[in-house]
Amino acid sequence: MAESGTGGLLASLFSDVCGAAKFFRGAVICYGNFAKMQVLDVPECLIVKERAVTMALDWLRRELVRVARGQSTAPRRVTLIG
Image (tube, rainbow, N blue to C red):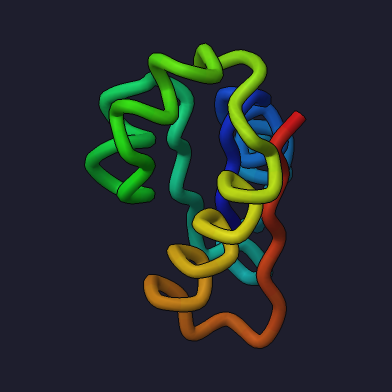
């Protein structure tokens, strides 16, 4: 799972379930601008130009999918950009 604007809300809901480790392997949460630049390779100029809140959602979605694919062997992956 990879989350951005939700700040880990869905990961928290999953991990609160007893026995969640059977179906939930983990999450990448890139909420702040630093994480977006370091983990998702979002250029700083895009963050400054678009402001993080209104950042080009297509870019963010694509990068979250890329990170989720690269860091998980789970059969299903979820990305959430709230």
